[in-house]
Picture 1 (cartoon, rainbow, N blue to C red):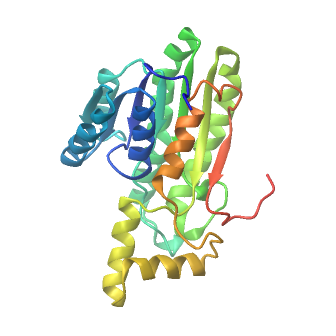
Picture 2: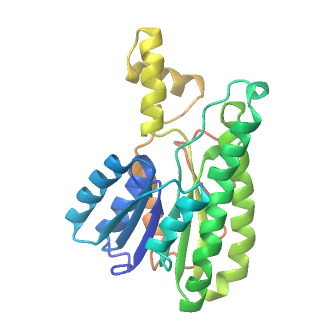
Length: 261
């Protein structure tokens, strides 16, 4: 299916790996030109080279989008995108909320809430003026279903979901949509590192540790998700066919959570 966004320009933060990369790739496959950003230059440049194989323009900006300097560099490279996709590396897991430090709180707020808000505020006026825009935040299921293990991720993203819902109402008549995707457990660089380390500690394997987690947290699918599951949903929300979907937070979690709405 042609999503009707060929020739559009997208800014994708956190695009060098995982769900951010999957979103960038799905957009590239639809003919969307890209400006992709992440902190690690080497992996980002490799991602850019691979995405160019889809015949689109790809500009890589190595920068930390949670800092003012990084934000300025990224927006200088792409001040007026048609599409903005925001994501980031998740903060540490927190099995005991009492051990969370003020520095960890500040870092998670800067990365998970304030940075995406600043980017949205920067790109939104141009979208409104042009009467077309798509904004998607790849957040976390913990924003809707609190879990002590993911407090540093869930709490800032819950605030972001509230902000997105409010702003979406303001610009809906301008053909600009804002939505959130709330993933559960997915195979990502972060998860790979966490569960590989657990496997080394326990004398097992990555697959065994994933299976143990899926059983302990009662994931009905019995597995973690593929980043492309999220990337394809992001591309759809950015499409010409999704103009009436806005202000929503869509869960993608293999039926882990129990909620009718």
